[in-house]
Image (cartoon, rainbow, N blue to C red; front, side):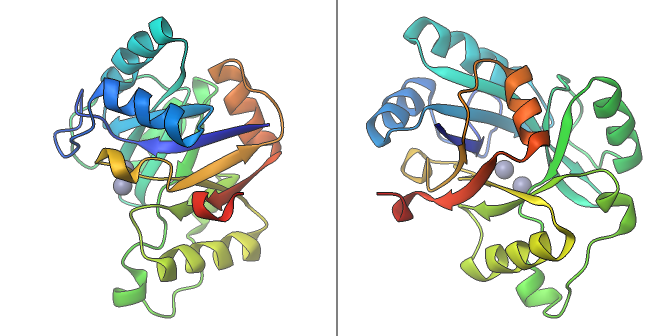
Length: 207
Ligand SMILES: [Zn+2]
Ligand SMILES: [Zn+2]
């Protein structure tokens, strides 16, 4: 079993985050995370740097990124790129990630829906045909929008992941994904994400 925070920003590549590499490592060990996914906005660079720093300290970092598309923010694993921070067409993202053997997971799919779209209960077909999981537990979203994401996940029979979306160190690990198997590599992570052998959780619900 592995407890993984799937969605973290560091100050290496995300100007919006204050998390320094050594803080991330200290806090992750303190709260019992087995691994952290670094998912900077539009780039893989921060994740790569954090991966190298953590390697020396014996801690596991999985490298990903968060891409802004017209269908919302997407967590991406297995496609290692550096793109400009602007709207990246979902169609292009899908083509690139699929050919790289990676995976796309919509981040906080219902953020803001509780205000702007109180009765929205569906996802567009273009998105549904490209995903197997949703981020149902996002540490920077309201409980209401996370609950809505969970409803949608069930409606479509998708898998759910959890990540803190931490931009400061206290937020780390607020939401996590619990994998049944041990994940050694990013290939293992992607394989597991596709297989569905995991669940999302709030850290404070774990004993
Ligand atoms: Zn986001
Ligand atoms: Zn984020």
